[in-house]
Image 1 (tube, one colour):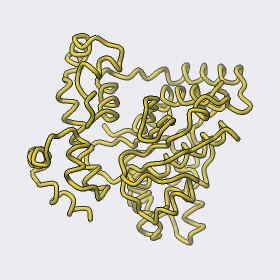
Image 2 (cartoon, helix red, strand yellow; image 1 turned 90 degrees about the vertical axis):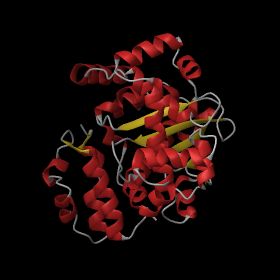
Image 3 (cartoon, helix red, strand yellow; image 1 turned 180 degrees about the horizontal axis):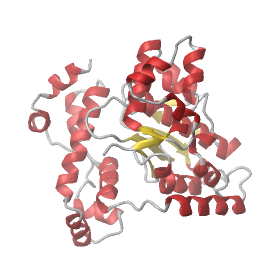
Length: 336
């Protein structure tokens, strides 16, 4: 079943479309989004429909930076009760932990992850956002919106201690690179990989401005009473770890088990209980990332093969024919 998203996630959509001189109603009808739902913050709408809506709006207006522009119409309040928890967390690190733990209240299809290990940008912590939907779907505008919101929220939390060192996208830049670099105030990494903010370690450990522990406890109690806690399955934790390590020497069952603080046999048992296996999940992650890289970037096929952990480009070709019945070049030509 496709995930939903709270209607508050589209805050500012009407205002932006009208500001640009377009009537939002026809596109909303096309994707079966009830306009009245947007006036009720807790209404649920299809995340797939919302994602299609943003892509279609960018195409209609001719603005490749539509998602970035929409973020300027949003505030931390789009996260509802979660906003009260994270704005009152002691540190940015704690706020991000809360986001990871409670973002399912906003949408189980929007995933935030934090990687404190040494990354492609020295002395930084990688904060990534993913719009996760089954099947083949273009998520560029929604991905950009989520990344822009994360940037704005982290800047709000850290105040003068906010240092964004670099940013990467989940797709090839839609507009001039300078547009992204001007928006984020940081360099855009050359090759797309994931929607990621590389914040300084100083920022990661910074105190949240004006945090109030009592308010945070009240908000957490509210979320727990009304929504419970979304415990991640072993397969979901493995999937997230694989996305971070695919293409590296550490992308094997033993290392992944270690990252999850599990013995390899315990991990194997948990995955078996969930009806899957490490190799099956690894294949699923490769399949999803292959589509993202082939359709969302112009990276050479040899580089994509290495990023997916294949020893040669021929391995990627065989996998694509098995998964999709098409070669990598044929898949890329479908989305020029």
